[in-house]
Image (cartoon, rainbow, N blue to C red; front, side, top):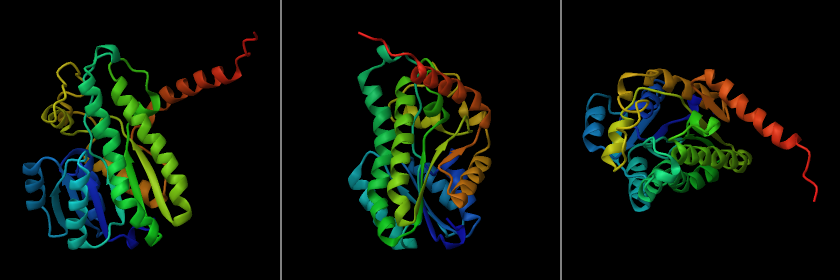
Length: 264
């Protein structure tokens, strides 16, 4: 979409990491931003350090009643939402699928997948009715490559976000609404803190524990997203070196499709 036509962006997981990087990048284009996050202290800190075009709203993306209240709060301040970024998420705990507590699996799916659907449900129909806007859903490169041990539930949820976004893009395109799925690699964030705060575990995962100190700068990831929105890209990829992993997966799929059928 033309960024000059956007007036208001709503971003979940917006008080840190990728979400805040996106928020700052969009604000740089003169867009008012509502950052939604479950961490009230971080929200207060972010909003206090930014101009009045930033507002914060506490939101647990699993809570559909809270979504309705957050939408009302945001639109009373800045008007209809033109850009929706469903970015809130938690990480994985490095356990094999067969060893994972069912409660942990349910938690990852509830936040990383159902939370995305809840955002689309809250704002998508209004965008369609207005005939414009853009939705970004945050998945992961692990949703494109999958197969890594200890990441089964996380990869499953992120793969589902990709599939949901692909279907949503096809549905919304005739109505002038763009949809992109963001598939980042490692970005500096507070993912470990959010995961443990919500009942997940990260102590067995060196790739996630301490992620606030390693990876791409959130501001850089935010600029990737802004460019993706402006070009209406179906996939926004921040770490293209994962292409080799994706190609290996596609080679395996091609092998499966070209294999001779087993005759009875």
